[in-house]
Length: 334
Image (spheres, rainbow, N blue to C red):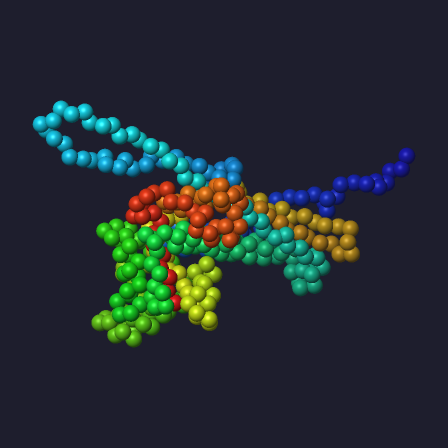
């Protein structure tokens, strides 16, 4: 009997979850996301909780219309009952993948790098890419929901955001009336942000010029601005040929929840049988997104929605009738 093995499981046949890549993703994502989500003053919430299925359905009691009415002390008439009514809103799961990314081991050897360098590079880049995708997903969804209803949307037409007094921001806040104080932050494209700085300086508002130069920020009605060049804040040629339109979002506390509902799993595989040894890295994760005052339209929007579906306003249905109870307001300018 031959003692030479002709077929055997080898290292190249096995897969394992790579803790080095996982660590790079976790550290990078936590550092990047924490800054933005904390700066939003509670408007954007990021958390983790394992949840099965493609949707998360939550029930709530609707406000009772006419709960408080006039009472007649001289009457013995029967008072009509009112009832509690429950409604439901849904958050939707978004499934994502990392890679796959492949490289020959030889490529790293020739560069004078160890095999572990690939893990570090992929982990760090994946962490940044996940954070960018997460922010864009939130902005895409909020913009879609808030611009669908005139109650939460101001179309500034061809005007810029500011004309001596931040009129655009004031108009957006005015949509909420006596609940304007509920707006805790702005999300704004850098083009709009710097236009606001320049126009406030040009308007020579008392104290604005010196404040802008000293603090490097414009007057934004007492609310912080999260500046991001998210493509979902821009409409190419939205004003006219060569002139883009921009969206600015004013958000309330808890406007959007992004929840990691399936832990990130990254697998590294050594691939043999080719001219060179190859290393392949691939990962998967899932997040649920929900918007304050809105439900994901399960029938029309479907499960695991594409970016286009998330950006479709009619896929976000209003569940809280009073706009003051919703995620905020949106402003469109040039």
